[in-house]
Amino acid sequence: MTWLSWRQFRTQALVAGAALLVVAAYLVVLGLRIRDTDAGGLMRYQSKLYLLDALVIIVPGLAGMFWGAPLVARELETGTHRFVWAQSVSRRRWLAVKLLVVTGAAVLATGLLSALLTWAAAPYDTVAGDRFSALLFGTRNLAPAAYAAFAVLLGATLGLLLRRTLPAMALTFVLFTAVQVAVPLAVRPHLGTPVTASQPVTAAVVRELRFLSSDADIEGLRVHGGWVVRTSKLLAPDGRRVDQDRYDSCVLRTPETVGECLEALDLHVSADYFPADRYWRFQGLESLLYLTAAALLALLSRWRIRRA
Amino acid sequence: MPSDTEPVILAENLSKSYRGRPALTGCDLRVPRGRIVGLVGPNGAGKSTLLQLVCGLIEPSSGRLTVLGARPAGTLSRVGFVAQETPLYSGLTVAEHLRLGARLNPRWDAALARRRVEQAGLPPGQKAGRLSGGQRAQLALTIAAAKRPELLVLDEPAAALDPLARDGFLRHLVGSVREAGATAILSSHLLPDIERACDHLIVLSGARVRLAGDVADLLAGHGSATLEELVLAVLR
Image (cartoon, rainbow over all chains, first blue to last red):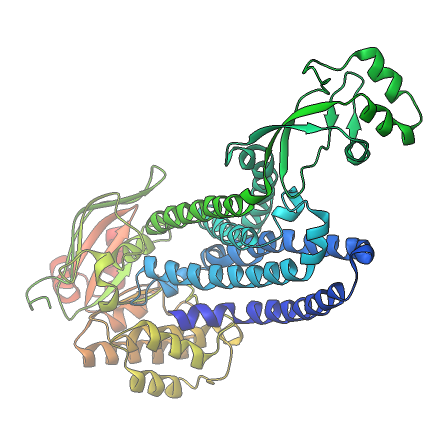
């Protein structure tokens, strides 16, 4: 059965393998060049790394659409299931081997890509210090491989339920994208309990902010390497909200001097955040979450194949 | 192994419906060992449904079905099946199909498979998608036969063959089933094919069994001279 699964998957695997080889070679070269650059010059790799991040983001979805969705649907569509299920191998075994071969390949390919990108971008990521950001968290270390396992099983299960390749591919794309958007927004912040601490609002901090609202809310506070999930309004040293008149007199100045003006007020905010050392816990938990979802889909398709 | 007297197929009040639409209703059957069974009936009579139930591809909605003394899903390695339109992997070659058969079937008879492929003149390097309908049928039958099944199930196996090829195909089928001491059940809407190959007959119509038994007994019992007369009399 392994032979048949491999034989059916061979062409796609070789094409993907060749593409992977090209990208891997490029990542090695890029990683070496980044290591030859001093910290000050790292910014010029930003756009290249964004492109590579985008690649690692879409690879699991592609695996789900092009490897997962047709895996069973194509057989049901062309009728070959009536041929292969008439051999002496049970359907459950047939399905298990197919799923293992293709999921294994997708996890391996995505894992390798993620590992290489993590290595290549490491000096840049260290300086940037935002590996908790939605973009970097989902494109480094373990998480992408778990996404790939989930995507392939989502595709295969939808293919089994819908029995048609194209609708299964389309729905795989839609659902997988929805999950990838929903998890960082709605699930990831609940994978742990944040710590609450007071953060001084210096001129340097203000320059990094994305937004200062008219009623003293801030957006974009960063704690190096950590992940801020909530910030209070700007607070005066006595712990009460900053005086509106004094705040207004600072923020209505020319942008360059806002930071110094606010710093002079000796302000702080109370922030809920996950410190940098929680990173691996989050990577582990999120990977586990996706792998559990993948395992549940495998069980669902194992049950459904009997009645297909 | 079932004893000689135990029926190969035993159905009791067997029914199958698809979303409430009956495809087979209250079917009672008892097919003895060693027969070549012809399954006839108009399109939509339930022939494919019965055959797919027998080889465990689908499950009954109600009633009981025993094949070779067991539940159909548990007899995979002892039943050979050639589905309608003989689906094969179009991207795999003839030789790769034989390899697939060898890998997926513990009792695979490689010598038989090779011999049959040669006799049928199938080029081993040809992809199945580029074979003619007749060649595909030959390949599908070869794979089903090389499994060394005790029961061979064929759904319209000769439909894609021209008359000459059909004659050779049926003769070969009968020969290999007799030689192996197996049982075969094949559906067809071509009565002459059934008449030539089969010694047991099941007539289906409107999702029900209208007639079943050994051909000789049926002809004697109904006073018909030919199988065609008999079947038409039953279906009218």
